[in-house]
Length: 160
Picture 1: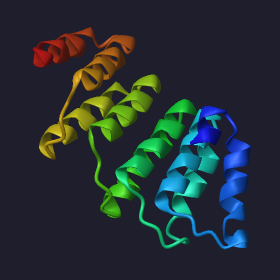
Picture 2: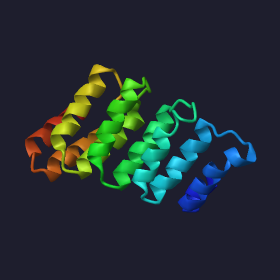
Picture 3: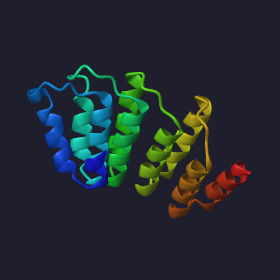
Picture 4: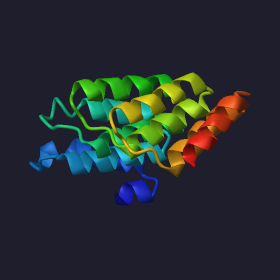
């Protein structure tokens, strides 16, 4: 967490790598912090590598882990990787929450993928994940930026 706040993603990786050598067992919390540090350092590929290494460490990712990794994809502008991550985590039965979907919608909106944003909204409704103002704002922005103003207006009306 201190590494994340200080922008020291290299130090975060170094600490995680050194843990087994000094007989300290890593846990999901330490790896979540390292993934968040990588996200802040725009190191989305390393963040995903660390996420997928959890199974090698016999650790189960949480929604916090997933949210941090998706945010790393968002900072790298990698909507395809974020969508794959959401799918992979669903198969592992990691719960997705509003924060997860908001990050996913954000990365797809930034990538100009308004159609996928609308699919994610429908999925949230189907699995009964709360749609909040952040959800709608990102979705409206995605439609607006893609000149889909009619859909943006529909979403605005859905908010009311």
